[in-house]
Length: 77
Image (cartoon, rainbow, N blue to C red; front, top):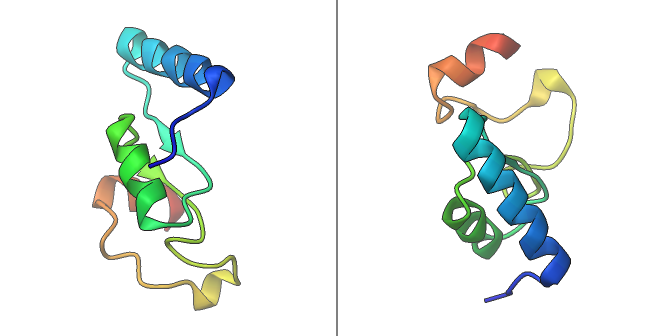
């Protein structure tokens, strides 16, 4: 499993500290593999995007989003 380098580790620590202070949601970007997804969840991400979930495309051909909690979908529908 990939371990973050020193700069990445400091960035992750800063994001987590901000989350703990403010309750901000954590969005992980660039999730391309199951390993990336596992790492994002381990770091506390509650949302994510990347090729692991689907390639960019037209909105009218977007994949089914029924697995996304309703409170996250409503802002986009």
